[in-house]
Image (cartoon, rainbow, N blue to C red):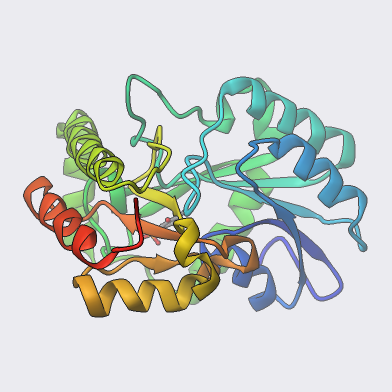
Length: 284
Ligand SMILES: Cc1ncc(COP(=O)(O)O)c(C=O)c1O
C-alpha cells in the first residue's frame, strides 16, 4: 500500500476482512472505506455501492477469494466483472490470493490474472504460507500491474535485503520439485472441513460448508446470539477448551459469527465437537 496510496487517498476494503487488509491503507496514511460482504454473495453490488458512496473515490480496491474470514468463493465471471469495473474507473485492484490452492469438491479458485488484460489494473499476491505450510517463513510474491511491481521492488530494495537465503533456496526447491504438494495440503483441509461441518451439523449447529480456504465461518446459534462474538468465543474457550476467532475481530461486519480454523487433525476436531456438544446445552 505504501507504493499505491498516500494521505488524502482512500482504499475500498471488504468488511469483514483479514485485519491487515483494513490496516495497510491506514499505515500508508490513507483512509479506508468499507463494502459489506454479506452472506447473500452480491459482491459486485457491494463493490458498486461502496464505490458510489465513497469520497474521495478509492484508488485501490482490496479483494481476496477464497475469502478470510467468510470463506466466500467466486468464479471467473466475477473476476471479469471486477476487472471491467476497475478499467472503467481507473482503480487498482489488489487480489490477495493466499488460498489459491485451497478449493474443495473440485472447485478451483480463479486467479484474477486469468482475465485478459487484468495486469493493466490488478496485482495478485501468492504466499507459500498455506499451500506449502510455510507460515512465518515470509515467502510470497506479487505479480501483475508492472508499474506497481517496479515500485514495490524499489521500496523493498531500501527496506530489506530479502529473506534469509536458506529459506529462499528451500522455497525454490519446493516450487520446482513439489508442485503437487498443495494438492495434498488441500485434501487435508478438505477432510478436516468435512469432519467439522458434519460434526457441527450432528450437534445442531448448522454451518455452510466452505468451498475453499482453511476456515469455517459459523453463525452464532440463535440462543447465544445476544452474547456477541467475543463473549461467545470466550464461553467456548472456558467451557469447551475450543478456541475460535470472534467475528467482530475482522471488523464490525463480522459480528454474529465465529471463525473456526481447520488447523487440528480430524480426530482432534471430532473431540472438539464432542466438548462443544457438552457446553452448548441450549442447542436443540
Ligand atoms: C487473506 C490472507 N492473506 C495473507 C495471509 C498470510 O500470508 P503471509 O504469511 O504470506 O503473510 C493470511 C493468513 O492468515 C490470510 O488469511
